[in-house]
Length: 329
Ligand code: 5GP
Ligand code: MN
Image 1: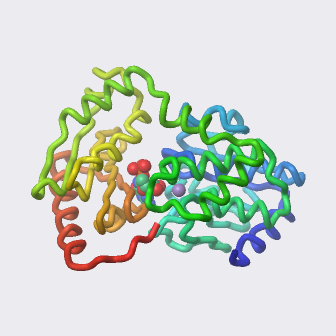
Image 2: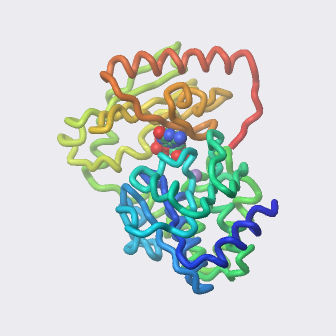
């Protein structure tokens, strides 16, 4: 362990008012890590609040503390703010200003594209930020109880795709085993996150998969989710999550793309494998992420966004064919 968890623990221990901010469209890693830290701080009498500009998706509403997550920034300035998995402060959406205004800003993330902002930057190659948060909680000397374990296990299970993604390491599995010992259940998390969908969500999955297109000799696949598709399926926008990962299952596919038309612009989800780097494609458009999972939001007409993204994906495939870069989580 680096000494950053200890430095972070020393700052958190002394603070009276902590804001823990998630990124927009928060996932299980972000929420689990944030809620786990809040619980740990509560155990030592430090008052902390979790903020998420986009609230809490249904799959994570049963996490301890989920009901208290704030969706609007606090009126008063936080003494210490913790940005969880925000590669740039603006990833926190409406909480970005509150991060900038805090006396001390702590940046905890495992995305390759993290900009390294803040007073304390704790970046590492963990499969999930939940693994880093476990180290911070250990440095706080707070024992992992069942509630904290549920939060952190949700982080690890979701960011490793239930221990199936390539980022899964012995560190992920060792932590998971400790969290199970502390009373958390992999089955309960998988059941809620991956084995439960609404009928509309499943209909949407069918529609999005049925309209897929293959390109670049079957090495790229993409599909589009326009608002009409959500309406006719009877699905919620958050139910688009997970579809792009299924597209990547096609034999021979190296890059899978999902274009979702939203009021904020075209949201592009990227998944890749076999040396093609998702984050490189996303960074070309101001987004970011990991080697095998990334995303960005583009403004402009859908057909132009699709054409520009496909061109960038093809460029990355040419690059991937030339080098065999080692995998980085
Ligand atoms: P997803 O497709 O599940 O929304 O995102 C995949 C990964 O890419 C996640 O780790 C997510 O945090 C990251 N990501 C998605 N969209 C963006 C974006 O617009 N900017 C940055 N920096 N990262 C993103
Ligand atoms: Mn993560």
